[in-house]
Image 1: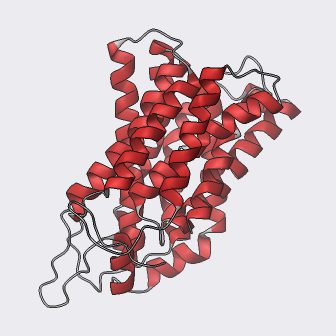
Image 2 (image 1 turned 90 degrees about the vertical axis):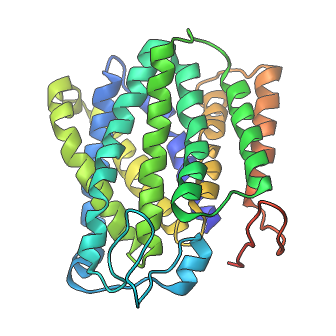
Length: 328
């Protein structure tokens, strides 16, 4: 299911080009409309799964636990990892309730990202926010699930972040407040990704998880959309752009991402999501007529090579500091 994660990242990579179809629109308003529409579509699509999750009891599958690295809940003691202290036969509605903070994090990530970009520029803000996401995800997964990252993941992630930085260039002013906001955005992304992965590994439907998480984020972003103005949605081009961003780059993308999290470790998924800036760069060349410098092309190759390294299955075996991978 790594292909589903890559598919989601490809869709995310089209968002920047699509957003250029509307001129003069506040980027925060565009992001808010994207989340409101995408969250609504996900709630509607995931409605049956959400109702089913709210009405039945589910347990942690040992097989799912092995795949994701999440320890199964003990039937005898009822113990579970850190914040997940719910019995193994806990109602799914309670487990999905753990996603409410993640829903707030989804909305807050958008605000942190645009605040960072406004202070330190698109290039630096994007590299720090997107590049720090996989690092924070790996650290959170390690801290919560006691699963140390493999050496190959750590090396490939470092190369991918380097490639991303080279690809996007060094434009912008490296202001401390902007970088801190971008880092906070990366941490928020890691938080909601790890939270979703842990709930899915506990047996919840990935569709229901994404529906709850992004439905909640949509509610949070409605006031932001109203505050920034909705007049641009009355224009056909503005409405079509918002519908594409909401339906394709949010609803469909996170539907695929959730499916990918069923079998792909969340740290690996976060690194594969770095496909996004590569797609955005290629679309800039193919659609917008932009040109890549030789340095940017080198960054693109670095990024591509690292993603291939992460996507390939690891050999079965254990070395120092590595986990034994489970065949998918």
